[in-house]
Image (cartoon, rainbow, N blue to C red; front, side, top):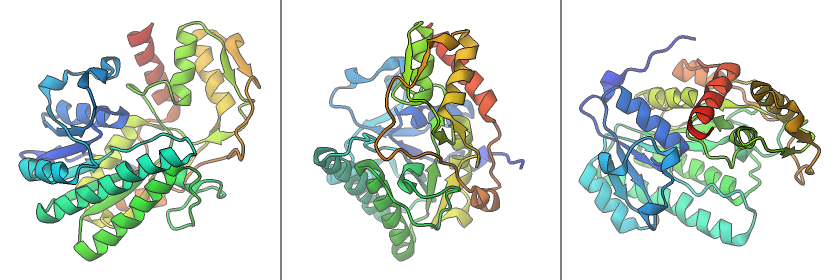
Amino acid sequence: MNYNINFEAFKNKKILITGGFGFVGVNLFLALKKNNIEPFILDYFHNVKDIDHKFLPFHIDDTNYYNVNLVNRKEISETINEICPDFIVHLASITDLKKDIDTALIATDVNIKGTLHLFDAIKKNPIEGFVFLSTSDIYGGVKPPFKENQRVIPASPYSVTKASVEYFSLLFHEIENLPITILRGFNLFGQFQKSNRVIPFIIMKLIKGEKVNLTLGEQKREFNYIENLIDAILLSLTNKQSFGKIINIGSGNSISIKEVAIKIAERFDLISNLDFGAIPYRENEIWDMYCDNSLAKEILNWTPKIDFEIGLNRTIDWYIENFN
């Protein structure tokens, strides 16, 4: 499918990105700046010196940045009142996948309560569009292809909180008419992603010439290049048909971790550095994940413009340029 982003719809408008210094936020910021749109960023650091500038292609002093914690209801309300955004892209969240009570408590405060604080603030400051980025992790071990209307089985505090926010989003769309779209992203990768995800982990190990310890790699995942998601976000913000909807954003195709690792290692001529079977599979390993993306096609006219091979090579090029 062919689509074009109508950047004119954002001219003279205020776009707020929560979690704007994260992987998705940085790429969204760059896409908007490329089209002469200056977004606002809300993100929180105890100390801004903790920001890793290797993954930030701009200086924070050159942005409309608000260092505000989502758990602080008063500050969120004051910030929204000050900015008066026309659109909000809500990316900020605790993404720790650990399965313990401490993680659950922190994720509940930030991911659930923090989002409700945003909803409360925009009730008093009506907006034109709000995108909440959820995750494919909420599907858990159900059989693919994953469909938006099927039961979800979240398997970590992170995914439980994302599922909870989806329900709250649908609720407040219904009773407050908030213009919310929920996008479920699938295993994103691309430039500016840190190495705590499998693709950059493998790339960084090979750049250093190190061994890459992996499982046997039989499990399959759907991977989606970051620029495809950015397009879906921008399409959703102004598409009223998407309001009150949950939409999968993925290609509908999966590939084994072993195949991905080999494709990356071939670029470095370091196949021998891959040690398959060096680590065990996770307990309750999910063996295949991919989505049904028919709703994205129908509502957003969206399918991935950049396929996996092209996106992977662009990603490898970026890491080589910046970390070799």
